[in-house]
Amino acid sequence: MNCSRRFLSTCLQLFWFSLVVAAAPAAGAAKLGDVFVIPLENHNFTQPRPQAPSSEQLLGNPAAPYLNSLVTPGNANARQTSYASNYHNIPGLHPSAPNYIWAEAGNNFGVKNDHPPFGRGGSNRNTLNLSGQLQNAGILWMSYQEDIDINTSNNTPLPRNLWTVPLNAQSGAFIHGVNAYNGSHQYFFKPKHDGQLYFTDTNGGDNASTSNPEISHYAPLQQLATDLARHTVGRYNWITPDLYNDMHSSLGSFTYHGVRYTGDQAAVAEGDNFLSIIIPEIMASSAYRHNGVIVIWTDETAARHPDTASHTLPEIVISPLAKGNAYDSKVYYTHSSDLKTWEELFGLPLLNGAGAPGVHDLSDMFVRGAIPSAKVKLAHKAILRPGTPSISRR
Image (cartoon, rainbow, N blue to C red; front, side):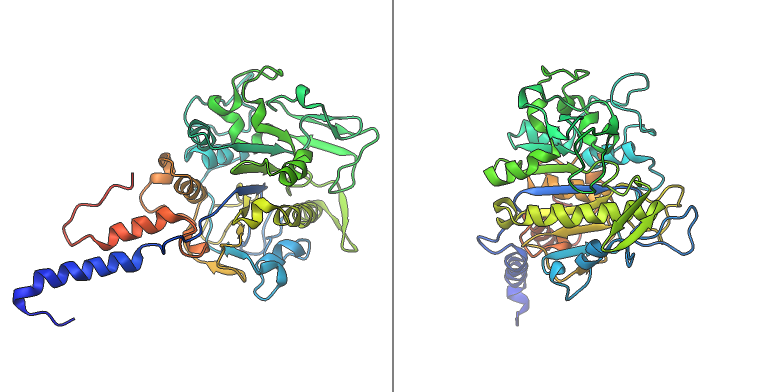
C-alpha cells in the first residue's frame, strides 16, 4: 500500500481494519458442540528415566496401545485428534482432590487433601465453579460416575427414583455381576475424582438422600449409553471411571491384548482398555458427530514425582474440529487452560486461574473458530496501537 504523508492516517486506519477482517472468524465457522471429559489418574505423559517409585510414562508405553494410537500421526485412531506435549501439573498441587477442584474453579481454595466434601475434615467450598456457572446459565451439565447408584449385588443401575448425589465412597465386590470394562467383580468409587462434588451449588449440600436438589445432574456410568442414544447428554459431561479403570489402582494383574501385566503396568492397561471401549462409544453418537469433543486428561503427576519441565501430563482432544492426525500443540498448558476453554466456549466469565495472565486456552489444538471467543480476542489485539490500553476480555 503506497501512502503519501497527506493520507497516512487514512491508510493506517485501512491497514488496521484489514487486520481485524483477516483475524476475525469466518461467517458460520463451526464451534465445538457437546464436551466429554474423561479424567485419568496419577501418570505422566513423559518423564525422565529412571523413575522411583516404579511408574512408567504413558507415551510409548506398551500397556497403553490405544492411548498411543491417538497420538501417532498416520494412525486411523489419530485422524481427529490433537494432543499437548507441554501440559503441566499446577506446580506443587497434590493430591487428587485439589486438582479436580482446580479444574472446576481455577483454584484449590486451600484444600490439600483427599477428604470427601462433608464429614470430619470435609473439603466442601461455597464458591462459584464451572458447573455452577453452566447451571446458572441454563446450560445442562452432567456427571457420569462409575459405580454410583448401582445394585452392588449384580452391577445394574438402581431405579432412577433411588439415585442420589454420590458424596461418599463405596467399594467392594459384586456377588453376581462383573465390571463391564475389566471383567472383575470389583467396584471402587471415591468422590475425590469429581470436582463438582466439592461445591455447594453443584452438590446440593450435605444431603446424600434422594431429596438432594442436584440429583438430576448425576448418573451411573451405565446410563451414558442410554443418554447418548436418546440425545439427552449434557452440553458439558464429566465421565469418571472407577479407580480400577482410571489407572489409579491395579487389580493385581490384567491381561490385555494377550499380555499379562502386573503392578502399576496393570493399572495402565486397565485404563487403556477402558478408553478403547468408551471413546468409540461416544464417537458413534450424534452428540459427538455434531462437532463434539472428547478430552482425555490426567489429574496430577505420578506419586512423589517432582513437578518439573521434564514431567508432562497427557492432554488429548478428539473432535471433528481438532486439527487432527495427532497434531502436537507445544503451547504451555495447565488445568487452568481447560477451564478457560470451556468458559470461553459457553460464554462464561473466567474464574480465578482461568483468567490469570499468561494462561492459554486450548484453541491451538482445534481448527479456527472452534472456540470463537479466542478469535474475538485475537481481533481485539489486532486493532490495538502502541500505547493503547488493553481491551477487556469480558
